[in-house]
Structures are given as structure tokens and as C-alpha cells.
Image (tube, rainbow, N blue to C red; front, side, top):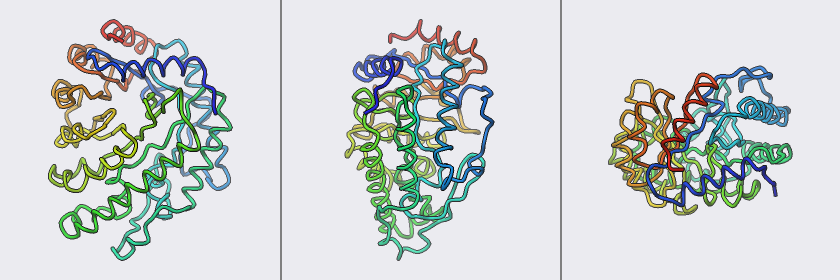
Length: 355
């Protein structure tokens, strides 16, 4: 069992208060490696430059070094970012751990070709010890070995049932909703079961963090999963009700909660996602060509009815929208360009937040 440092323990207590107290006006904010530009000692390397069969430990060591460098560089920055490590092989692995399909790597992500090319293969789809499942678990073993209590062990950023099904079947899934509804239901259910299996396998390996779990660089009560719901953002509300919500709800019911990530492109189903039972936190991320969620934060918080919101924005947005943000419980994923900008906006947030 990992013994975490005082910084992680203190942040865990702050998030515990945030989740236990449902009072509006609580605003936390995190400045992350992916929202703050800095140049690292280790040069950037694309996913396609790594040999994951032979360089797996070196890959995890690379991520750990960069995390520690970020924490040193931002040491005097007031920040609700929980330093944490998960396993990132790009998006292709999020379905390949179930199918065993070949994963193709690019600079920043990975993908697979559709595996379920005909519905006759559906009966062969079940959790098993594939190459990528084993590699995920081996990577976590390296993270456990490298951890000295200065970063939290973080579970997988799971593809939700719809996202997994989309990767396994391909974009034909969108027309399958009309042409093969029974098969789609079976596929979605299989993906929900696989997600539960992977999450439980990882949680058994990594344990808890101060009595809860860390996902998306936030501490959560209990060990709830991260779910991406991007596929559901691209379907009609009636299809979300029929094919999406029930399988996401199955995962929530199993774990007693979840953090759900989806996009501004799916604003038309946000209210329905917010009504899922046992949901712990809901993010609406920004998208090019869509109205920024920060500009609609009042209506989003009204949909939430007290459910915590994660929202991404720039420091300038905080200054102009602070009164709206104070209407709910909000965690801001904050984009800043300099440490001074980060220090200034965090001081402003602390003045206006009750936590």
C-alpha cells in the first residue's frame, strides 16, 4: 500500500469537503501539464516512437519524470491539481484490451480498425487476457514500483460503453441503431461489462488514495470510474435514452458513482446525462465551432441541480463569469499562459470561493 505525501493528503481532504458539502459557491481550480505551456528537460516524444513491448518501463519512467518536473516548476502555485499517473497508450487501447485488435500509433494517440465487421463475431467478444490488457496491468506495476508517494495512482480514463462500441464496430454503429438495434444492445452491454472488469482489475492492483480514488487529477470519494461519453454526443436524445443511458447507468450502479466526460457538441443531451442516478461529477468540455460551456454556465448549473460540474476555460473567463460560477459546485480546468497569470487568477478564485 502506497503512503502518500502531505500535499496529496491535504488535497484529498479539500476534495472530501467539496463532495460532502453540497453548498453552492465552492470553486476549485486546477492548472495541469496539459493546460500550462512549459518546456521539459525530456524532449517530447510521440507515441509512435516507443516500442511498448521492450520499452514499457522506460515509457512510464518518462511520464513520471515529466510529472515531477511539472510539480517542481509550479511548486509555489496554489493549485487544486492532484498529481497522478494513469496509463496512456492512446485511444486505440481503450477497446483493444477487449478485442485484441492491432493498435496503430500516431504522435498523440492511437486507433484500431473496426473489429466487429459482422455481427456473427459478437459471441466471441468477452473479457480475456489480451496483449493490451496484460500491458496495461504491467504498466501499472511499473507505476507502483516508481511511486514514492509523490503522485497518486490513478485508474484508467475509460471509454464509456458507447465509445467502446463505436471503436469496435466503427462508424457503421450510427446506422446500426436503426438497422440492428438488438445487436447494438448486446454490444453495448458487453462493453459495459468489459469496462467494469478492467476497472475492477486495476483498482485491485493500485488500491485506494486516502480512502478514495483519484481520476482526472481530482480526488473522489469511493473508487468511481472515469467514463468518456463522446459517442453519445453525436446521437439524438431519443437514441441516447434507448442505447446510451441504460448502459452508462449499469456502470454507475455497479460502482456507486462515476465521473463523466463529454463535450459541448453534446449539449443537447447534457440535461439527460445530469439526471443519471449516482453520478458523482459531470464535465462538459469545449469544442471548436461550439459555444464555450463557460458562456452557458448558468443554464448548465441549472440542469445539474447541485451535481458538481467540471468546466474548462481560460483565466480571462473566470474574471468575467465568476458570479455565474458561484451558483454551483465547480472544478475549473484552468488554461493559463504564465505562472504569474496562474498565481493571480488563483488568488481571485480563493477570494470568491467558500472553500
